[in-house]
Length: 187
Length: 234
Image: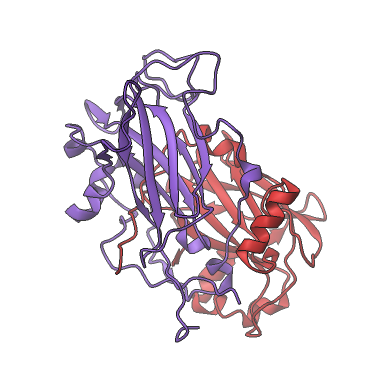
């Protein structure tokens, strides 16, 4: 028997009522970890205006350890937040920031470069968008099978780049439209 | 040995298009470039696992989070979370939020001139049980006006956010109520053309879960993407 997935509806402007309790700006990873980094940026609409009512969900795939059931038992015993997950709303200036560990572990021996998965929700999006953050200084980007699916001129939109402010700070903006429109994925 | 779920590509027309001009906010926020087709990797087939530690005692009962009961018509919302193969999705996090009975959200950006209710926040959370079932107690949300077009009103709805097995099953949607005359005029509800798909967003009045002398029952089943991997599939 096959069921059709329920269709998506927008998160709307008032999602903070329901989603705030599980917001986290510190994306903890329970496994082998790389350098600690802060990633910050802005979400901008088609007029280049900041989006003050977006929420980003970050998934650090390298944090998966074993079966979901094992993780669930562990999560219940530790009484803590799921490893590898972050949820960050933009502020009134369209800005967001979060801290994480740069992913290191490569589970797939196919040249995959370290990356984070981003789910983006906001008023105006009838369905969430999915994108990825890669790291500009990573040599493995050249061999990453997903980056290589993207026209070369657009790959840069997924790269978090070193900030001039602080050593461990990276910058990554989301452009919903326009010349620098961020690459989003059909999943 | 645990195997992540299999995620088939979505059939065209079963999810909304990003650009839907009748919904004004989509015009400057929908991507204009074609989306890049992503072969599913473990990065998306896995996802966060939420435990009971993320839920507190009264999180499923939106009528019991303050000193007194909220105003409005009490409702019991129940349903099952299933995958595409009809299997229950167990231990899944469901978050809900809604306006109060007067159609007002407890949010600083909601400017609708309807009263707030000191006994209602409008926020709930729960995990599904071993059969994929969930249950919330609440009050029926009111309809409210919005600025999309002249005399625009949102039909009564409850927002649902769901995490299944793997990020590819992530779903945010809205549950509506049967017989609402505003549904026919709502560009968000009408963003999808398939009539059956639209009907599935409308809860069913439910005698079985209607609680005598207490509350009306509504049933809302949700289907997430994904199905069990069979031995033939990797």
